[in-house]
Image 1 (cartoon, rainbow, N blue to C red):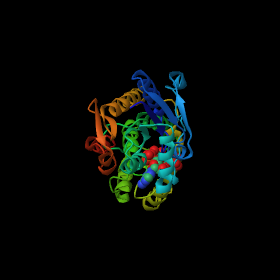
Image 2 (tube, rainbow, N blue to C red):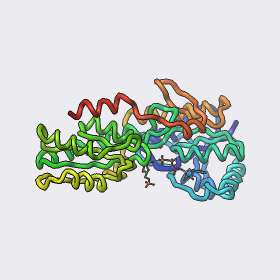
Image 3 (cartoon, rainbow, N blue to C red):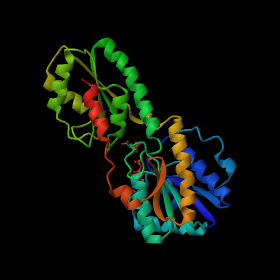
Image 4 (cartoon, rainbow, N blue to C red):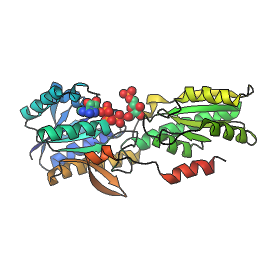
Length: 324
Ligand SMILES: Nc1ncnc2c1ncn2[C@@H]1O[C@H](COP(=O)(O)OP(=O)(O)OP(=O)(O)O)[C@@H](O)[C@H]1O
Ligand SMILES: O=P(O)(O)OC[C@H]1O[C@](O)(CO)[C@@H](O)[C@@H]1O
């Protein structure tokens, strides 16, 4: 293998740049030519492919977002789009790919490999942490810390005004950000898509808490089956039916996706990037390079997207015990 390309796809996540840098520098170290594909699969289809040198990735390890840009490409979901992408890769002589993204990115990569046979290694780049085959995804730690900082600040107002705050964090299908920011931020309740929320329990717990605490923080993952933070707040407010209580909703939104990556994310990203190139050279073809129990592990895309990564049981237990 002489020429490889790297791209970032799906939602950007802090640490993607550190990962790109590691891919580029490892590839050069190993004597390979390395190319950057801009705007994910969209750029693969449009032929936005440029040779990268070591200096192309200088001064990016500390930056959020992605210098290669990202996109959600509808065209890549079509056979015609994928054929165009393949033709562009062949025109550039690219023999291997490193895809940095989440489960959607790996779903596309698996299909593309099955159709065209270009070896592809994935790096887990998503703030959601919802990928099987790695303990943590690149960007998750930064996102949790951003959410935590916001929760700490909101708590000041909640306490000063005796308010009940519903704080919405990201996670369409996964509650990892909600649970870890909830534990770290001392939330009274966390609502996540993985477990069914009984709103009567929330109300009961708020009533009990009122005897000892005058303010409360409830962290709601955006994909909770009971609804988003606004919907949940309205339902709980109606059930609690206490006009003396002041309810507020804060949606943290995309602030969680940006910012300088934490040390943990930079190290994880660098390690996954290096391992992806080593994996390609070792003959892996449709695997994600993740880190499990401190060790690099190559997991087939089919498992990364097909198997469920469960929330840590102890974290859920902690939420119950610590919020009394
Ligand atoms: N079934 C599929 N077939 C082909 N390509 C796909 C498929 N699913 C996703 N993709 C491609 O992968 C891209 C990235 O997927 P998606 O937008 O779901 O983000 P992601 O990788 O899951 O990241 P995040 O977790 O941050 O949202 C899609 O825009 C699309 O181009
Ligand atoms: O920026 P977009 O495309 O609206 O995507 C938002 C989604 O992306 C994520 O940040 C990562 O998958 C989710 O948590 C969130 O629901």
